[in-house]
Image (cartoon, rainbow, N blue to C red; front, side):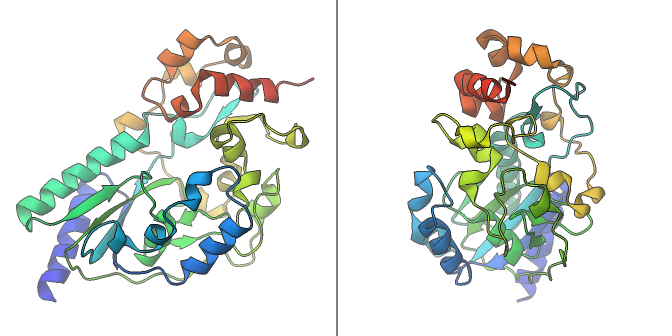
Length: 309
């Protein structure tokens, strides 16, 4: 037990040194509390046309099916809150997480360095790193690892830090001292529910993903339904509305990761610049960006949908 405590402390200290805001540990095992929630979510069709969410149901709930003999889940949070915002208040709005380089690459590289540290200072192990790239319930593990609690908008909220964080995991066969979940602190606040323009946030932390602006502007490949016309509040890729109104995000501080700093050209784009954008400009502006996921055709579709009649 002494080594489990010592190694857990070392890993957390190295994670901090690498730039992670928070690091917590939980015992790998079946997520019993989350199983009925996931089943109900899928049964109600809240995943919309994201059919991939129907796959690997058991793996989403049991990390030992992802990593043989898994004993620990190390959960990490990395801040992406930007210091500067888009300058033209009339311009179409990007979600803050997409301002810089695609987080999948940046955070995965940081995790690879953490793995190197563990192997050099503690010992070799069997494990895998995950950055939103496999059937892992990130928020459930982050909550269980004591990083924060899940708010009414479905986002993990870190105390005195907010919710503008990427989540990642290292699942491996090393036994470490686990942390304990923390209590919830949303109270009677309903600001996120009240602010959602498409009524995607239900009671009891249930999110109808098929009604979320992020779903419409990123995941949905079909035409956006006309019934939500005029409800996007100028969001062209993703949505931060429920986070922007969350009182806990008054504690957000600007990230210092160079890879997450936005290009000045993007921040300075006028409303007309967005609508005049060519494929060449798109490829240059959003090279290595998460925005590439929607492709130029998808972004043009979103822009056209935002355009007033």
